[in-house]
Image (cartoon, rainbow, N blue to C red; front, side, top):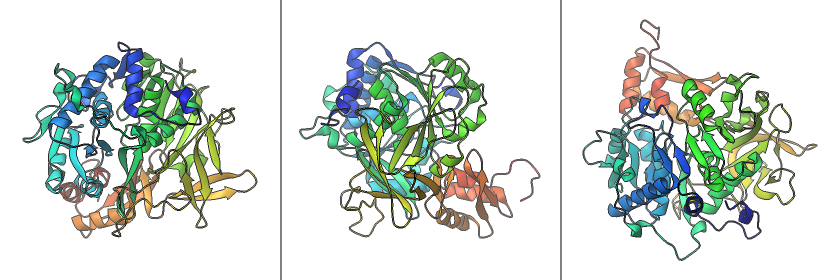
Length: 510
């Protein structure tokens, strides 16, 4: 674990792959990654459990496969995968090959995928044959048909479409090209590692981060949680966003322990995993806490819960702490940054400090991870070690395209509206960026939703309704709702929008 050197003034010098290799050298036979036990119910293949040695071999095999396709260093490789071992191996394999990982939310369909990958300049897509009834490999094929730079599609799973490269054999092959691992002469940690996508009124904006920025986000969560070396972690948060990497991938790499993954939220499978894992940290969407009573997680009182607030404007209404477990609230501001804070009592979340934030809070020698401020326009500004410092791709915005804007002081405007309490020097987030709403962690632009629905049927309309657990839910109206849903699916609309028009039962009124 590199926590000792992270605390030093010299800062972070390791890459994500360095962190993995260090853990693997210490405990090559220790359990590294564990799939959801119900994996076969939502995607192909039995659950995988990999030691560090097995995971290292699979990562190198994946990197070798990418290099063998002719992809060059710094090629942007998109990843759209469920929360399984495959997603972790693929992401680290992309990095070991010297390329840039661009994870995509699983609910994105052709329209959003094409928009995001065109802006990022992606060269390949990594996906899976299916998640549930959705055929993701086919979606990737249709998206690639609209994107000239993409020449390769790789997929995990069975019965992949023609022209798609199967990648399941990376877990069994004995032949690995060691030269596939890319080395850099310059500071590798300062090199771009991943691109995620901030959704705004102008579409998907690529947000690039180097290894230092990614690790800084994970350090914020790990130090505030107090997780120690060789810890067992259970995460329900996929690595498709910066918050997902900061809560799932990086804490696991820093601790060098075992990462158990849970996809979606199957209560019986989740309970079985929690009992089997005996984890030190559990990562959940914050709204899920409201579903648990005072007797939540019996027998797991020593486990720390990292609760992810994808809609930080709801933080002030957070539920009291269930049982006696410690909770670290993690507020996510799109793809700009996160703020992690352990609750001081068995009560509600603490307010977001105004100014420099260091972790662990109040500790001697705490590490500065982010700084907050309030703009004259009333929106939240962020800067610091985890916040991006440049637009992507290089030169973005010079031609008038939407891009991540960084001011001269290094602040990035999140767009979230906030209120400053001068007496306590704390910030309260009151609203999401104008024109945006959150559905179960996915931000949607009202203008884009209206345009998409209007294209499907002129009589159709969709509105966001408040929902205690999801933030909002979408409700669609039309003369023929099923026809509208089918039209939205054909045009590659987000699954949430199409789902708003699906009839719940026969005979339901439109």
